Amino acid sequence: MTRGKGLECPPLLARSKVQAVWGIKGGVGKSTVSALVAKASSQKVNKVTLLVDTDFRDGSSRFFLGEEARRLEGWYDVLVKGGRLEKYLHRVEPNLYVVPSGTMDSAMKYSMMIAQKGVREVMKIVARTVSEIQEDFDLVVVDVPVTSFADVPILKCMIDSLRAKNTLVTQASAPEIRRTLKLVREAINLLPSLLVVNQIHPRVLADANERRALLSVILEIVEEGIKVIPIPFSGELYEHINWNSKTVEALEECMAYLLWGVGDPKWCNFATRGLYSPEIAKMVASISSPSA
Ligand SMILES: Nc1ncnc2c1ncn2[C@@H]1O[C@H](COP(=O)(O)OP(=O)(O)OP(=O)(O)O)[C@@H](O)[C@H]1O
Ligand SMILES: [Mg+2]
Image (cartoon, rainbow, N blue to C red; front, side, top):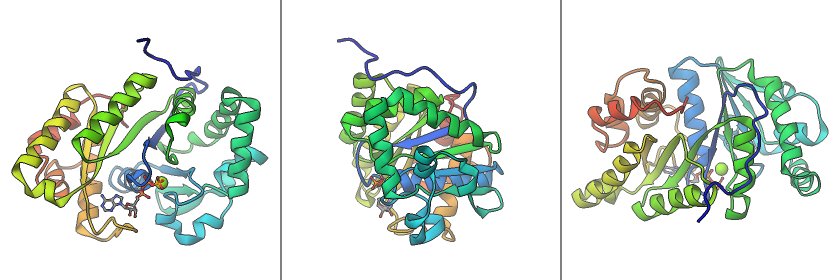
């Protein structure tokens, strides 16, 4: 079988600060993870961070701008009408800025543009828009809408064009993790720099065998040099993010440690309900895959 298919596109940025958060299944937590990574980066690591919401239906800007986020102009309006993204920045915290996805009408026009001009041409517009803004930031987190199998090549092209790091979000069952990785590897030869194993069921954490089985899949992936962050299912993340809770605070601390080596590995023990010992957290943090 030939590998490395998919639509590979030449890099258009000399350097990139983009971290694209994506997944091939709806509702796995892409927007939640985007918001958590952006918050960890801005609050715990003091990086000036931009969160770009590119999902007009229910993307991550809702966690910072509320329901109003859906009605605001933003990302897709700039791509289809021109102008600069900085006009649509919302400063939600001293170090954290959010761009809403923009209107549904513009999102539809963007899809039409891809169909008419071709994905490579459209990526030139995307890259120009990102290059105009990214110099003002240390990190640009992009919340990508669910990517159907048919659209994975377009996503791959975007990642290549923007030289983006990519964070893949999956649900926490061992078969689902394996299936997803196999698919992205074999179908398009794309390896994530970071894998987030989300919504771990409390039963898995409570049952010694299930817990061991999940951890062993995670460690296999870690041994391949991919950072993995496991996130338990938590009421504090359900429907909205409770930013003031101890659980969410611990997750932000753990992400800061695993991604940027900032802080203390003990937070990961708390955040993963004991799945990651401080030793495992140290091992994951020491992987030099470019996740930040
Ligand atoms: N670890 C978690 N624990 C509990 N609930 C979670 C967790 N992660 C995500 N959720 C909830 O699952 C739902 C889907 O999450 P989210 O919107 O982040 O997923 P998504 O992958 O971005 O979805 P979409 O495919 O629609 O873009 C939301 O109600 C969210 O609050
Ligand atoms: Mg989403």
